[in-house]
Structures are given as C-alpha cells and as structure tokens.
Length: 93
Length: 45
Image 1 (cartoon, chains in turn cyan, orange):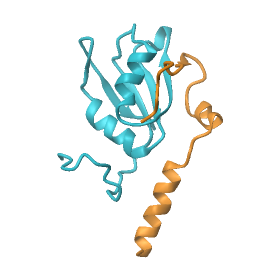
Image 2 (cartoon, one colour):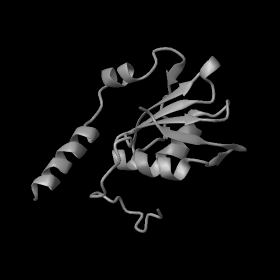
Image 3 (spheres, chains in turn yellow, orange):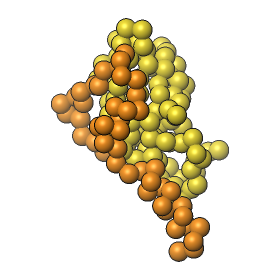
Image 4 (tube, chains in turn cyan, blue):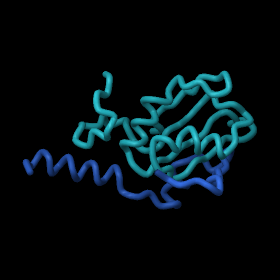
C-alpha cells in the first residue's frame, strides 16, 4: 500500500513480524562501512551493523534504534540496486 | 486514551526499548559476522 504521508505513521498498527533488526542478503562482497551506513543510515539512526565474512559474505544484520525507521528501510530497500545487485531485506526473527 | 490505545502504547514501548550490547550479542550468531565501525563522519539522523 502506498504510504501517502512519508512522515512516520506513529499510530499505524505494526504487524508482529516488524522489528528493528533487518537481515540483508545479496550485498556486494566488497561493500564498505561507509556505503552500508550511507544506504541504511538514510532511514534512521543505526544501532549496529554486523557484516558477514567468509562463508556469510554478502549478508548483514542492520539494527535500527527505532522500529518505524526499520520498517521504512525494509519497505524502501528491498530490491534496491547496489553495484548491480538487488538487495534482499527481511525482518530478522 | 482508550484502554486499547494504552495497550498499544505499552506494546510499542516494549518493542522499541533500547537494546543493550549483550542483548544484541545474544540475538546474532556468534561467528561469521563482524561489527562494522561507523565511519568517522557518521551522524545518526
């Protein structure tokens, strides 16, 4: 559903699976901290980012301070093209 | 505030309370991931 107002819809009921931790897949292997914070930082204050190494390369956990920021990031970044790869962004359960 | 709104506020506060580092460590696999240092100029919006 198109979010009419981009402002945080504070009183919208949040489905249970929505939470502040996003699991990201299909990241370029050589992505840097600056790029990660640039892409994900646009949606809100980031609590922490954990980047996969060796066999978990290309995946990451991104934790936001605020649940609505995480929702905005997930809604907008799923399918986002980074260096020719389409991001997969899921809520981490 | 209706009771339902109060319940919703409590639910939201519970899902939005600050996470400690220990809680974060407990949530994620202990190996295979490294914590990224925020770039020097990073200012949380």
